[in-house]
Every structure is written in C-alpha cells, then in structure tokens.
Image (cartoon, rainbow, N blue to C red):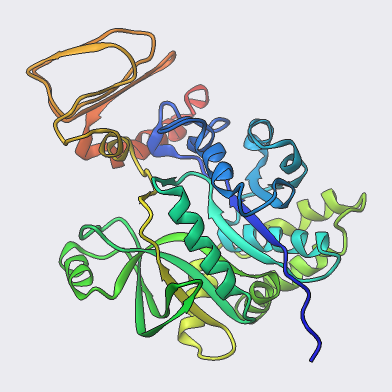
Length: 372
C-alpha cells in the first residue's frame, strides 16, 4: 500500500468578532482580540505565540473583516501577514472556515492538510498542556472523516456556554482520551446545567476544532451544498486578478450559520463516514467573555480590588477599576466595574457586565458612530 505523504499542519484563527461586552475599550477597529486584556500582548498575539512550537508562522491563516484587517496585520508575525483573509461581509464561522480551507488547499497545491481552527480571543493559563492536547487532536484528525472538538471539563453549572455530551469508551491519541460525541446541547437553564455537571459526561464547547481540509470540505458538501458549490467556484480564482471581485460577489451568498449548527451537530445526527469526537481539555481555559471574567482571572480572591495603575480603597472590595494614568480612590463601593477611555466611561455592577453589549446596541441605534 502506498504510504500517504505527511500532512502539514495549518492554523486558522477566527478574528472577526467585535467584543462588544468589552466596550468602551473594544471598538469596531480595535476589538477585544487586538487589545491587551490579560497577560502580555494582545489576545491575538497570545493566540499566535501559543502556536509557535506546533505551527510555522507561514502556515497561520487569520480570517477577519475589512475594518480590522489593517490593525490585525500589524500584530501578526511577518510570515503570517500574507495570510490574512478578509471577509467582505460577516457570514459566521462555517463560511469563514470554508474560506480558509480552500486557501490552505490551494497553498498545498491541491493536496490535503491538517487544520486547527481557533478563536483569537481566548485565554489559556497552561499553554504547554494546551499544546499537548493540540498534538493529540491533530493526531486523531489525521484519520479521514474525523472531526475533533476540545471540550472543557465544567467547573460550575454555567448557563452561558453550549455543552458537548460524550458517549462510550474512549480511544487514545498520544496518550489523551478521546470520546465520541453523542450530541451538542444549547445553553441550558441552571437546573439543567447542574444535571450536566453532575453526570460527568458533559463538557463546555470551547469552539476549537481539528480536522483535515478534505474532511471539512466533504462535510460542507454534505450539509451545506450551496456554500460548498460557491466556495469551490471561488477557489478557481485564488491567486488571479479576478479573485477580489469574485469574493465580493460570492461571499454574501454563503449561508450565514455557525459551523457548530451547520456541520458538527448534523454529523452527530446522521451516522456515516463523518464522525465527531471530543477531547477533554483541562488547560486553564477562559473565553474572557466580560469585564467580570477579567476580574475573576486577575483577582487572587473574590474580594480583591483590581486596578490598572495605582490606587487606594477604603471599605471597598471586589471592584475592577481600569483608568490608566490616573490614581483611583474608591470608598464604600463593592462589586463594580469601572472602565475609562478618553471619550467614554463605563460604570456597572460586576454581575451586570454581560449587559455591556446592550449599551453598544443602543449606541448603534442612536447612530453614535464615534463611540463604536
């Protein structure tokens, strides 16, 4: 039997989000992933740095939008700047991954490759453990038809995440257990989330996926045939002068749906050559979904006050106070988020931090473009 050529590993970083819950720091042109929220460097730079031992910079692809492309490119290694793919309109993750997949296939001269699909704005406290899990996921994904997703063992009955239910005995890749996925579950009510955690068979969906390019495109053809046909049409124009015009014409026609709904969920419901697996991934993960989550990451205990610079408190606890360049004094307040930029000031209770996106929506409705 002819031995298959080694498959090169490419990473696709999804970086088109706006990060509205991080207003007023996160703006249309400088969203969450381009900011330093926690740690050193921006969220995007931290994502790229974690990949360095596994994926060469010239094999990193980033999908974003026209408003962010310029600033994003400046944060990437030089070898990755030519692989910034700009969506003319937002069409959710299935389309974004499809766009990257045909470009990777083109770069591989029509051959196959392994893909790691990753968000640009997540925090990983244990990067070496993360890379070990990635190696296992990529090894398992070498098998045609296998689609791997990282599942975070839940630490609490969280209602803000989707869940993955696993089934059966595990197989292993590079020593890591891998389970078949029974189904994906929507964000649950609290009582249901408690049941999920108690069962031990559920994981949070971290939105990190691993598969062959050919496996993904086969799945796209099976479950989103219209998008597949259009993306194959676009593929014929990669590297040609006609590409930009074709992208602008074709991309808005792609179905606006997440890869979870469009492909992964359907693959678990239609047994066949496409199979979905989950790897439990305990690696200090957080999607850092709000200012309250930043406080949770940085605070040594829930009552600690977190400052951007110097400050002092009197009878105050559990506050997140971000106003760089200013001395902050807080008296008699608890559980607040305060974030100041040159043109805006956010004040809210930490337990209402998820509602910051509603402020952005109100600014859009009132056409306050300078604040977006």
